[in-house]
Length: 128
Image 1 (cartoon, rainbow, N blue to C red):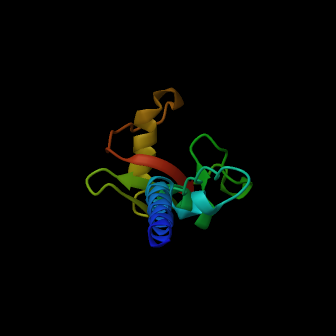
Image 2 (image 1 turned 30 degrees about the vertical axis):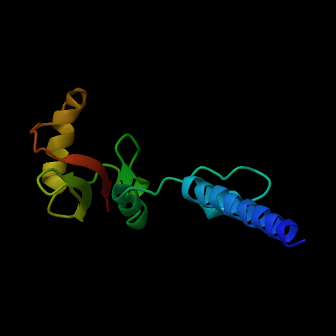
């Protein structure tokens, strides 16, 4: 009788250890949310907006290729959103409007703007 109980207990312990090992591997491979979720597979993560996109929205700016707002037609923008190459940092600055316009003239020669100077900026948009 003792050997039957011992053998049965050993089988139960082995099954629990095996199940635990499988669950641990699944959690490490897929994460707990995927394992515990039922139904549809997990949705793909949504991309976070870039700093440039956040600044364009925050300051109600227009992107290159978009028409400026009606009240800004024919006006020099008050601010620019640019990425500075040396710092790899995207900023919103009034002091960069001139260099940003020169960069756009350089990057898009078909516009016919002058002066066209490569300032090394990445221009994302202009603002009031």
